[in-house]
Length: 202
Image (cartoon, rainbow, N blue to C red; front, side, top):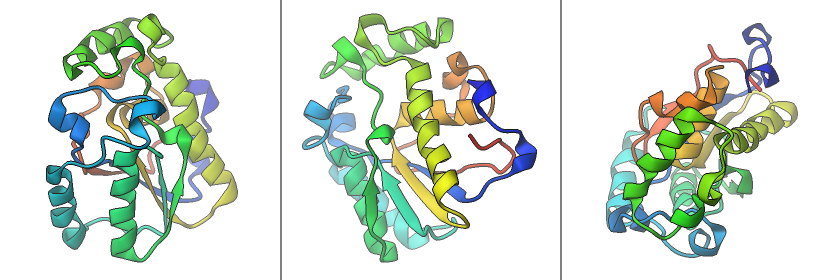
């Protein structure tokens, strides 16, 4: 993936904030919900997730977003709408920011995540058990940033997505091997991570 990114000297047109959705009903139940069939209309924010946003938004410590782009899953949509309501903004759904598809593990216990991540560490291209490959996630996530870089300028854009996709995006933009995405510090629910200007834009 590293050869798809520009050199750092070319700089960024926009500022980006990466946000993982708040604690969700899937988190609460310890279930993997990764397909549109389940994730678009169900498994939204849990009561804990709403409380996280109740605390986070009045204490917002990052630049104020001018645009919010979000995964169209219910948990990310609800998160984006809470932020948008706080800042008086509208939201833009973007399917490329969706959760990674975990194949046959869909609907099952989240204790299966480590099995997938161990295989990721061996091969970023694997699609074992119908799981979406790390490289596929990296392409679609970085494609969103690349399009925003082409079409927007001088904005502060909040991207609301999911844990695995955001960690994979950060790994890709950092120019490190995608199989190392779990070396990224895990992003907590409702956390906000500014995208460093030290990494190269796609």
